[in-house]
Length: 88
Image (cartoon, rainbow, N blue to C red; front, side, top):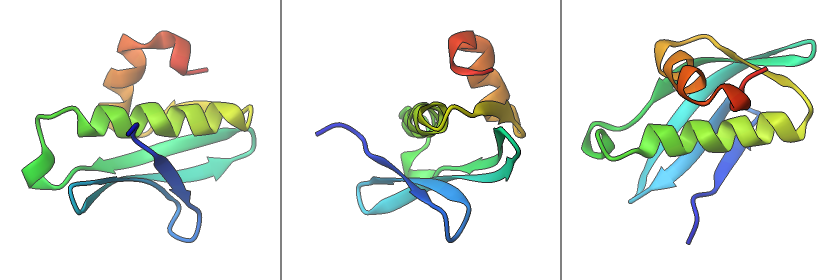
């Protein structure tokens, strides 16, 4: 089953459920952009690509809204450097 990232607008974060835990990426909307300000992966899931899958899903959702993706944390900045097509 593919990963399903959801937009939890009540908490301003994208979420990904993995093995009973939740990885998330906080965000702030501004005009035509979404700034991802922080990503968090539960310790038991780190080093397994969960944060990358979370950011991939978040970027896809942001792009579906025809908004720009802005990195507000180092993990997202690294992701966008590696995948320049995903950003602006």
